[in-house]
Image (cartoon, rainbow, N blue to C red):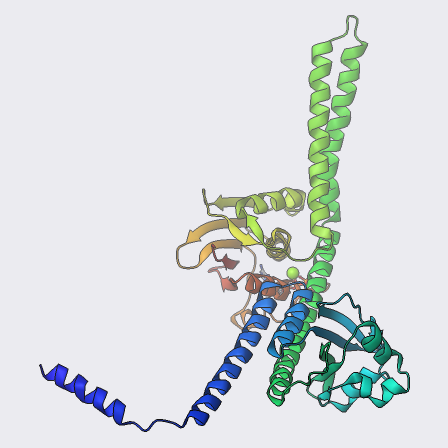
Length: 439
Ligand SMILES: Nc1ncnc2c1ncn2[C@@H]1O[C@H](COP(=O)(O)OP(=O)(O)OP(=O)(O)O)[C@@H](O)[C@H]1O
Ligand SMILES: [Mg+2]
């Protein structure tokens, strides 16, 4: 009962609250609509950035689409600033009009862009430059049928990134509210675009670096790889001559010759498989995440470094967990991580004066973190002090080392949403482990 009383009292209080005048309510309503539209446009842009990790075109298109709908324009154009001028990157128009690909910085739009402030032209045909025969304006008005235009320079940290322009086919000036909406949106889009471009440039550099590291690693393994290739090729030659021998007999041993030829085919396929693996590690590729079986990826690599192990009298122990779930990842990049860790381990053990040299590779499923891969060696390990610096770029204790291997491994693993860390093994040895979440 007291609760009902309280509710009635609350309702009374609510009714007592003074009502805002209709004009204020309508203004607040307008402002709310404006903020909502602005936020929706920004969310749409951020969605385009997030869902297009390698291609910027959907991001450009989202900027133009949203600018058009924010101010009810029929034409939207985005140009990015580069040394030669303003390059067209996205256009959205309901009319069959294609704006010029490049506008010089001293062009009509270029001059507006340089002013760093939005320029609104209610009637392009009434503009002085149109009357003086400016080619861009003539085309826009006479061919494109555009009359009202708004040019908004996109600036970030004083740097001109581009120009966003919107237009209409009739003389219908944009309202102050629309101009403000597009200007605010362009300012935020400039920040988002610049950050996205920088981040992608950084990724590109990282990718180049990772590729250079793979090529250098394969270079180090040349002797080993040559040996891996020589084995099946020698076997193919042996089986080929055996087959010839069977055919030259009188009567010829057809069945035996057939079996030898089948063996030749198997040998050549083994050699071709080695070449494919090397090729996939050495060729440049855009990173891509695919479903992969980490044990299979490890076993492929072990095949490549087998003779490197033999040469350094290292035994390999593999403890790969059965029925591991697939992970999402870039196969080549993850193989690069494992290869770098294995080569570091081999290099560490090759300096050992005595004692057992063992490379121990493990995989297991850790419920909280996903799949965990471990590469452990019985080498000299590292001091507590160098443990702090192992992943720092250019940290190396090797005469010919670059000191980039582990830092590249770390950025690859972090890019996969996992972590990589090192531990000292007592009495001697090193253990590197990384995890990749299971999706
Ligand atoms: N398994 C290991 N045992 C002992 N020390 C190691 C091991 N792995 C790495 N280190 C130490 O970490 C340093 C950095 O390794 P990283 O792979 O980044 O560079 P690097 O092997 O020296 O050169 P590169 O760029 O050619 O790989 C090595 O120089 C070495 O001192
Ligand atoms: Mg290394």
